[in-house]
Length: 586
Ligand code: C2E
Ligand code: MG
Ligand code: MG
Image (cartoon, rainbow, N blue to C red; front, side, top):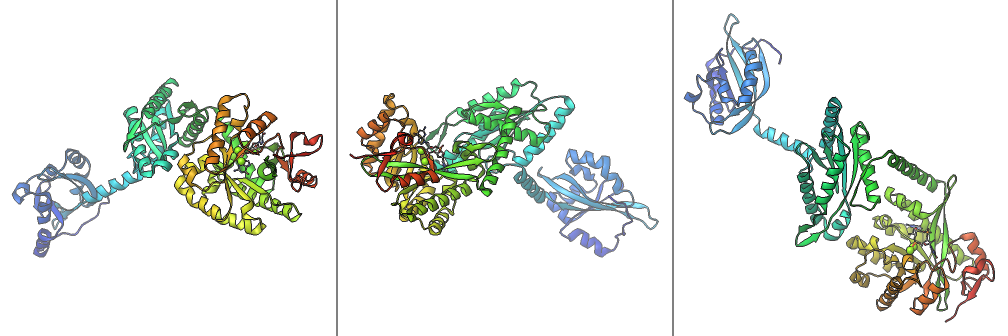
């Protein structure tokens, strides 16, 4: 508010302008009483001239604005100079409030002595509302109305400053819903949105006044518990949140059973700044997921070491792709009704220069999490097709090649284009390729899968459901989707002949596959008893260590010379010792 000399307004034209111009203007005497107002001023506030003249301007202010004006700004009106855009709230005659900005300058006589103050008033009520709305949008989640990530960071920052001054602790709870993706995919996004709103409401109800329940996005929420004085405190809240989430949700005539996983980090032990605390609570949340979901875990430094391991692993995976550290092994798939080896499943291995051989279960999940699976999957497909094409060129009869495709890779919008390109580049016959998908890849996103499955079928590519029986399949979809084969999961074959339940399951899967006119192959066949049981139940396609482990291409080349493919021989586990293979007939 700079002070400066102002021009003196006296001519009659200006008075007319003053009264009629559509602007709020007023003049005050040296006591702050109103000596003139424009028509627009009266119109906006709803008063008559006689109700205003002679009254103090601050009589038309809210109490808060009045105090502010009298203490700080009004005296300046009567100094030689001007003030600009001072914000106040005024009260209309009907009692409603308007936000205004007042700019004023003093009017002087010929000697330069101040005689009154002249002010222009701008009604900024709508502008303030729009600003407040913009603030709300910038700081609150539009779906749930809870604070968003920005406001969370701000509030957590303040909570940490306060805790630092007072020597208190702050609990940060990272909450992620379990299986929310399933809800979204199967019941639709609108349903998922409703569910998130209800969840937000429940979490808010469990929190205390002053705690922040923020939504970070998706199904992730963070609760900031201020002034938590012991380690017990946050866990007590975590239990409450878990209980609240576990209550069934009734929506659109459906009953949904929900649960969540919670990670807890505490200031100052688990981090002294916002980012570290949020990151560590997130890491702890993952630990809660891994230990079976629907529970909470406190952060520990070992968890951090694990996540650093993960980060290292990710960069190692990138390097492995670049340096060609991956290779494939091929496991024979047999048809015991006489055809011998009918196919091979390509299985990836990683030869790390330091750690040695790493099996897929130890890196595929991370490759999926990081998205690298798409590049790795393309490499597998290309390498498998090229290898099989080489076998053909060397005079071997055609065999089916089964390639595992992960969900993320399958859902890539250019998955089919990539596949086309690989088939074109390698010259491999599409009808000799089989894509293995697990049940969840298809069933978790049925609508999204249909198009790609149909495209694959139109290209004459075989489709198999891997590890069948371990996920949840809808029989209706099994019937309508263009699958060729079910692969009975190893876990049902493993305990044959000791586990009657597993045997009943296997028998049921075979019967169902036959009635749906699907092929069926048993995985993980390790002994004669399993083989005999499977054959007795008319499951003639098998794969497992009893016949052969997965083998690298150079060993396979030797086996091919022994006639594995050409003489339709069927290898058995004794191949290393005696004759490599035994012919199998009906
Ligand atoms: P899967 O597709 O079900 O593959 C069968 C797994 O069972 C293979 O393990 C194979 O070595 C193993 N196996 C075969 N016969 C027997 C047996 O008689 N007994 C026992 N105990 N195991 C047997 P592997 O190679 O470790 O692969 C594990 C999983 O990793 C695969 O399960 C598949 O889900 C995934 N995987 C492997 N290669 C790839 C790949 O290229 N891409 C993707 N996305 N996943 C892959
Ligand atoms: Mg497989
Ligand atoms: Mg399998």
